Image (cartoon, rainbow, N blue to C red; front, side, top):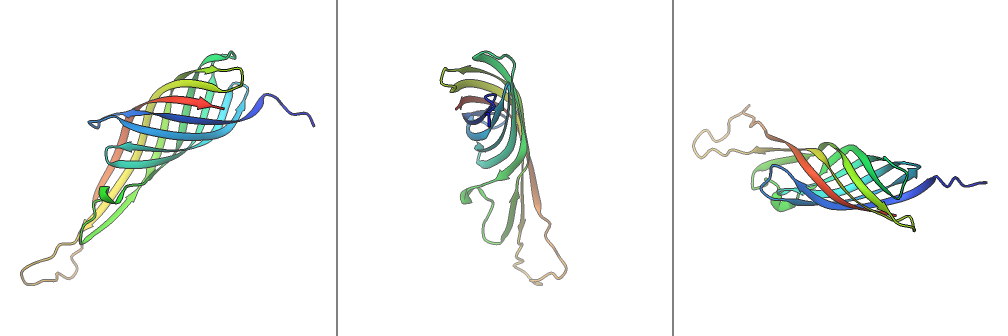
Length: 177
């Protein structure tokens, strides 16, 4: 059986910074595995990033297209998937008497980059794009009355809901092999 040289399994390691509405710049790390078919790359990625005290884990599909066939080429990319919430215990709004829940949401990113391919098929690149992630936190405080009547039958405390939408500029260094 003849092997098609235009199809290659490729791993991409990406590390970079996220700049947005928070007061500080935060880091990100992503690992993407997939196939390179001529000028196109199709892969599945997993990452970790921060936005202030909010740590999230995006799981996404990654599509890249090289704009030239040479060893040095600009490329465009698009990612889409789900952003999982992964908060540290100290970052959760939990204290005595709190019912706390968190969830992720939509993740997408799109941008441009430039890569340099070496003779051994390893490539290095730099990319910049726009990133969007959703994150939701809900908590209900228990209210304890310190005067009679202590119990109020039928009274239900509503959840406080915080629906975050993180819009950021993403700058990443890429290494693929």
